[in-house]
Image (cartoon, rainbow, N blue to C red; front, side):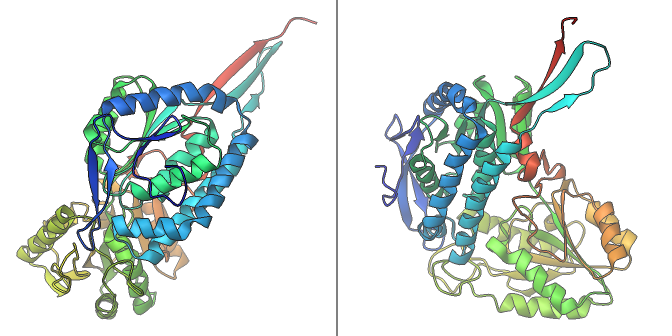
Length: 485
């Protein structure tokens, strides 16, 4: 099954679509209906090992291609993704739940990522270094790090994979990717685009299976020279410890607990609109989603009223239905955790202003009402754990120094948001907040040409931008001793 119109459900190893050795499959479930979308092949360590071996065989020829030749394949991939954006987006909504318009936007973003890195690969520059001794010359060269094991999550199943696959390929690396078992189908369609774009066998492989087994093979197999992971901080720490055994390269994009800070010089109603947009995108299941809303006491009342009304007006439902703005959560476990976080907030004194419960409007599906709460205690779990849920907790502050301390009072440092029209305040916040990504009046700051990553326990390294390609390159220093003339 290799045609783009066929729904692919198998592993992709060494340029061939194949079943798992055991014949075992895994059910992909629609979170809006709880119906099985498809059964996909369910591989393990043996299949992962074969994929790594295929990637190792393919790498010498792939890295010897010119950056221009690799770029042609990546650009063709981008074109095919755009041509099939509607079909891939529909698959994503079926397996992930997000509204179709968000899914399509993600697919187009992934295509842009492939195209941008196709061009960036032509700029993997070395340098000539002035010599300090007569008769010597010094240069640096860029060399691909090797076979990459990429592990991607379910919340942005195509674009987050593209952030790893595209820069790795443009750098001359080969890849084995493990998508989240909840959402493998849309990435399989992207792999079909890569296949039809002319990607040589073994250069990019795809394995769906038990995370522990596949992760252990990545960690223990010396063929895998780098792991790139997006997901929870706990798993990231486990991978980092495992990589130490072989001094394996690792990039980590981990959890977040982003503050959103509203200053009194700005329009509180406009701030509420920006805040609701950022919070409930993808149902709050976004690593950089704002999760603590600090509102200055002078504008708190107006901001709160506007935020509650805007949240109430959001249309919830099946992401395939017209006009839907909030879909279901990914699975029952995520729904249950959200219910527990809200209940814990209630017990510690918080007030639920809207939402706060599993929606009873749908006979099936993991729907949780978009929620706004106020009066949280610092001891509430929602204040320390990454919520990853459609819940907006509102807090009050009085001065800039206090809110900077509050914003930084977390082990996370992925993203932060500031709403202000005062340039001095904007600069102080940009310099004072400990986060890798800061949006000033911008709830969706990610862009392919800009670095993406976190500080503290939110990650290691950067994706996207020039830094995203450098993460897959080693710097080689070469010194020449010339013969005397």
